[in-house]
Image 1 (spheres, rainbow, N blue to C red):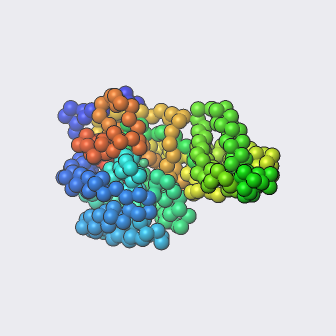
Image 2: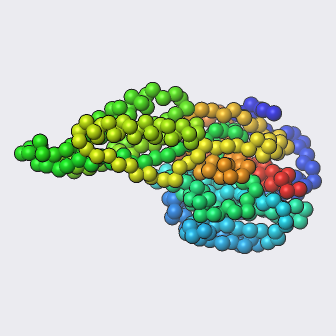
Image 3: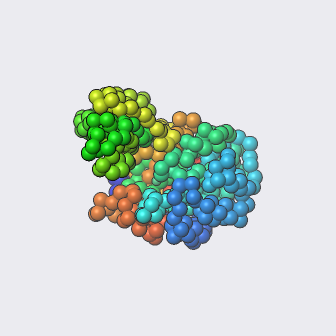
Length: 392
Ligand SMILES: [Zn+2]
């Protein structure tokens, strides 16, 4: 079922059946606390791996709600796990709070709302917990933005007992199945040989020349890619002084492709280009990976259908189209391990006249807005209903 993407409405006289009604009531009653915590995180933005205030705040609230909280989970200082007071046997669903912010623009990706909506969803599920044939947990991972915190937590064995996972990302539209792309970044390091640039340039090997040759070839490759592939590079180091032939120059490359296999193919081609450029000038080239790789999102269809049915239950419209040019998320790494979804909920007001996107200052404003909070409360309800459906 699909509604107009821009349309959000509460069906007049909307009546929820009993379990859903109890969940929604508990979440509504939690609204002011949810908003307070979200705005508190918003006012205290922290970069990835430094989210100590956020983790303290979320852990204190979860403990107040009766959860057993473990911070420093799996040896990651700003990861945590929170298990509810009563754990029923059966499948286990993970909610995935995020709480890292960006430099300069703070919570311009709205992770304050991801964290708070997971809390609100947890409050809703607690209201029906005795009826569940299974359990749920919150697993908070650091640094979604730059170093795929969930990928590292996964490698450290942070999701050993999880059967399903979900969280909702604030967005510019209600879209449930966006295809997040695989992404990886690495450094291309050219090593040459220093020499006096004016007196004995012939004794040097100019690493900057090699890098620039590489960049030109890279640019041709970039421009020949289809829409679904994004290649970007910046020069990190380009030499020190004009009177020294540079012996070390460094480019940073980022690749996004529809899937991991595509990333591997493009990476191999970029390595070839770098090696050809180096060889022409007698330089050497090496590579340094910058972050765990973000994998492509594998949205679980039965799970997303359950979530969508709950949006319908709440009278919320949504769009199921995929789109080719999308960002990446570390939630995608989990989606290869167990059924996972990571839909968007629109938090920018009607029409999005300024074409706002995530990481934009205006998106930060939306992440603190009353509208954004109302919308993500709907997402919290849809998540809690979905957990109930999975475990009833
Ligand atoms: Zn984000």
